[in-house]
Image 1 (tube, rainbow over the protein chains, first blue to last red):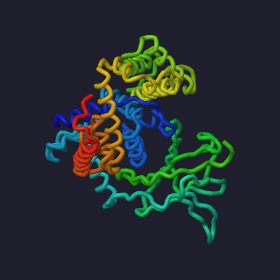
Image 2: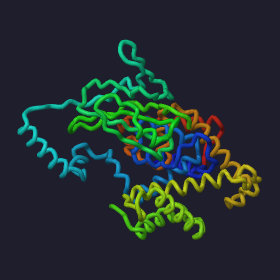
Image 3: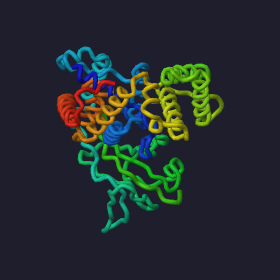
Image 4: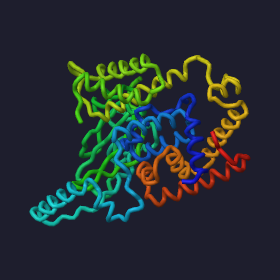
Length: 225
Length: 172
């Protein structure tokens, strides 16, 4: 790293003071972004926010310091080493090999089945109406009125799906396994409150394939806040 | 690691809060530990403090500290913007003209960061925060090569922008 880059980093660190703004994410959201607990799109927004907000950049640095010292964030792969060396050094190698062997046995036992990679669910939104004229609302803030459903289309036909709902501040979160478009149930309103704004996305899950996430959408729950 | 006794919970919270607020007084840090314990107690459904993963307790400690900093930032006390360059320079142990030049450089750095192409800005801000390129790539969900390109093109753009503002050095 050049002297100039070191100067830039020092100047950036020295400017990490300032009042929070009205659009600053909650500290929990910053923590979750750093620890990869937020969906990629929302994580990206938090990162961009820290570029413009010294206060949240300071909160990000604080979270990084604590998470790194506590060993909560796994070390990033060494880019200098060839892929096969990184693979051999990976701490997950033994369980991964054991898992692969078990999977092989299971595949031989159950017969050939080659699951392809999952594609993320698309066309997610609030579906209103039934029959010949259903209406799909994809705009942020659509009201999930009684009778409407959270709907999506899955191009790869995963075996099952999960809907993740969470409040903008990250304080409240619900993960609901679903087998078909989700009807508003009492648990959602009880968790977030009537009239609340809630972010949601769908995860497609299929056996050993990792879950593929849809875009994050925003809905408003029915009722007065 | 699962933590379920009050002493263990308190120890983890105190360690994190002491680390985050090492310059604060012991009393102020103890207040934050108590606030964190209260928050956990309010969330615990049954009797006792509840059962937690250490990572969750670190998240709570971080949240309590940042909330406190936000509260103090919003309280009606004298802010940096209301202090004269002489007072600010004294706070930073610098001469007034040095402090003003450093503050100008920091403002220019922020302005130039804002003017970068969005993808370069995202990669570069992580790099300036001390993340390695592979770590930044993981956070952004991008291939390492793309992230590396964005960091180095972002650095070049940033340098050109700062030089355009007449700032050759950003020493603080």
